[in-house]
Image (tube, rainbow, N blue to C red; front, side, top):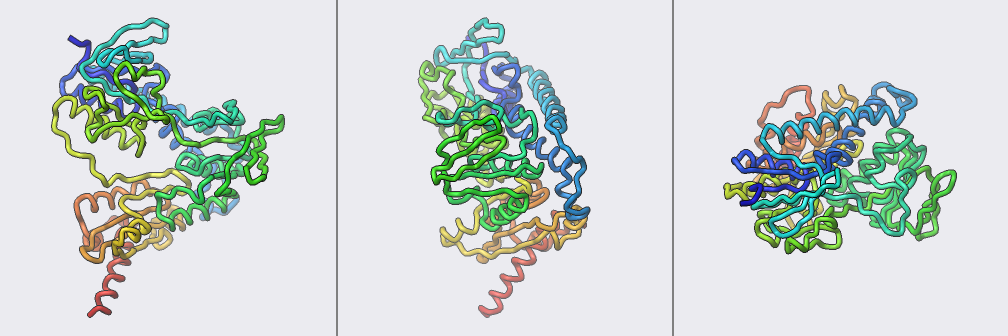
Length: 467
């Protein structure tokens, strides 16, 4: 008889939810993770610390209040790394306590160490003391997550040339920084350091950034970041990064040279699978360390599941949690609904971006007609109160059945606001629901009503001409 019904490798969002879901169904469950990584990358170097850092930056820099109090307004003149990390360490510590408590309350055994396969049902646990013990389980869930990908040609030192993990351990706020890669992580950190007053240069080999987002939203973000003295170098590739006593020199293939205090690489992520001995379980990973799964998150070995960033896109904490729960239910023979394909995307740049559904470009490409309704925060009393005159909400509405095809939000609270649109879309609601609904006043949520009225007025004009 195996030691456990389910063994989970990794305690990040996907691993936690898989373990707790199986425990709630009365199964014997264990989780394996390094003692300094309980909660996974999400808690220690990813989602939670970076979003907490962003909150600290916004608070201490006074950036969001400058429309009200003037461009020179700052809450603290000389912001140090200690100021920023104090808040981060507090939140991370609390979150780790919460996770340990949840696992304990649900009688999930937590083993400190790292695991690797001996055979398809057995894992050897290497404890921090160096001792090894063998654990067997009927089902195994791989939720080991990812680490930042590091190009072999770059000499990382973790202080002047770093990845997104090292950024959190900076000794001081750099006066200037080159960020290589204009993906989600790169743009979030570019926003934060620019808000702190660092001179940022973003180098991206593609012609643009965040191409999954609405074009108008990205143009707005670029405008705001340029206003914070961010320089963009699109269509450029880094040839070399040189370390000098006075800083770094980034040499581009076009011949340009960019001096800076520090360089941060945001070049995608690599699955943490190299030390799992996947072959002993009859599994393989691709060159990015990712594992292939079916719609139930089963690997090629039917009793082994994989969830979270280690399986690739969308690699979000929110989707990882749902994957973990779904995998556990399937393994336990419990019915589980399919994850809704309307998944909101949240990008914590400054200002933040969030969207659900399709973009204007996608709808145009698919030859799907739509009408646009827009609300700008400056038109809302709440927008004036909080000092955000730049935010906006955009609704894409079908003229045929008046349903919402996409919702795009840019500005304060975008990642919270998006869930109203997600709910209306998920329930098959129409723009008329938003027109007739009563929203608290003054709120940013009222932007839905303003945008809905804008869209329906345009639709009415089309109908009048048609008549």
